[in-house]
Length: 237
Image (cartoon, rainbow, N blue to C red; front, top):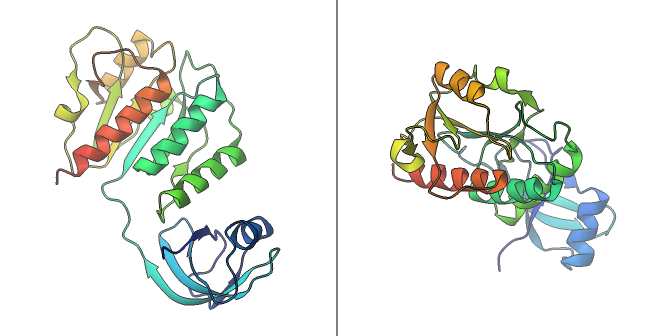
């Protein structure tokens, strides 16, 4: 039987025991119906995988005994995406969930000239990332950064820098242009796309223009296509 995985952000690497918070305890004991003696897994979001056994099946403060700790290998190379958040919050929440499931290490809310939503509900979005990490049985939680202005992000020193835009300029398909084995940052613009000035600014900073296909995509769809293609390219190694 597959072991259930729970989030334990405050667990210490050398812990011998751990007590889940009330929400996690309720889900573990009341919803999943685990009981004393059951084996479960814990993830701290930083790559540690804990194998544990329930010692107290209290639904408000479930306690476990740690039997084994493993440091899972970090995803490499790192994939980062800077994406303008949409005015419709549900669309970007969908993107965060799916991008986490597929595999992304860093998400930067990008504030460009045409960005319509500059403020984010960090706690809610963090909860979405955690749920997606657990659902997909991963042990590294993506780093959701604070919103950053376009001018700052384009000064990134990532080894491989890409920008997806809609202007009819010469571009290569992402999967043809991207080189596997390199840490990569891709920029995805707002619903009205990047301005021509922003595109030129990015190109001057070493970003390579790429296309994600022949159809015009919504921001969140473009982000998900980019994450999917980047992961597929990295698996070619």
